[in-house]
Length: 442
Ligand code: ADP
Image 1 (tube, rainbow, N blue to C red):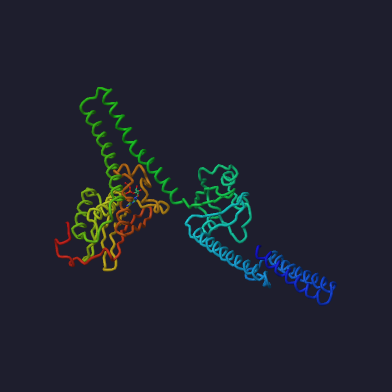
Image 2: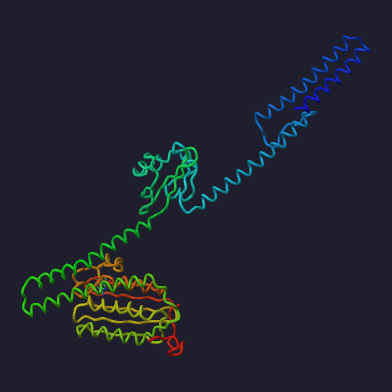
């Protein structure tokens, strides 16, 4: 400013000196005329530059600050410098914003930014797929016009966002979302959506499991306490007492079996996976399985062992024996007398299969996918009569998956069933590759 004053004062002084000289040479009138003309020209010079400045300020195009002369050259240079610094800052802010958006986009949860009126300002790809939004067409729309689930609309309208709300995802059958709004800034809101389908499923499995265990244990317990009451209240002869005691022993064995199976399952869930170092010698294992089957059958079935030679498995001998044993005992328990049970072992370097085929009662197709669920039985009564806990196939499935193996079930009601455990080549070894006794535990 001082600069401008000084330079204007100098310019006016120069005009005055020139006008004075003209006045001395040509007389007072030309002198005054030149002074006024000079001042007017100076004024026009400044007005023209102010004009240029106002024009640019109205539409401050970056990099197009006008050029000026004299003092205005200096003013515009300052303005130019200021404008360049502003542009740089603006670019920096844009970059930061873009980075934030990228981070928001990469977020595994859905993120929606809402304004004070719950209109969508921005959302990431996950939110688009969770809530069936399209940012291109939905920006600026109230979110409750687009996500119309009543529980969500009520949540948004309530203004109480302390807890998330759960809702079924629009247009994605079976998907459950947990949605929470987090107010921030002036009146803006961040809406976060998370797919909790798996968690929900786990939670309901846990609830069912606890209910099932309680139910399974309550039945024998009720019977036991009933017998106890009877024995203590009635004067029973020694023979009746023995009968009652036998029945009580049976119920407590049943409880014992359930608890044992539950413990086996929980150990399988928490123990580290079986290593590839332990060899399961198949031939003696099959012989043992056949012998156990004969005992369990008590001569009521024809039991056939059909084993291809040459290969063993790598894994946990105890677990494999338990899984195969479960399949064999099921085949016997669900095959009427005079039926046939076949134990089949086939292996190549590429894969191996242990199958149990029976000519038993068979299973209707709709039950097959659920057989490995805990406590799932086709016929509760029959399972119980034969000492079943409903946990056998769940244990089999666990053991096989710990060995990266699968369980294949084929069955036809009234004709029989085939349960096959399939192992990949990784778990198959030729019988002779490891010297006898080096890695074998059997
Ligand atoms: P359970 O202790 O009841 O036998 P499992 O988990 O071993 O429990 O088997 C689950 C259900 O699958 C059984 O209750 C039975 O209904 C059916 N099942 C299993 N194996 C056979 C089979 N070989 N033949 C017919 N049904 C079978």
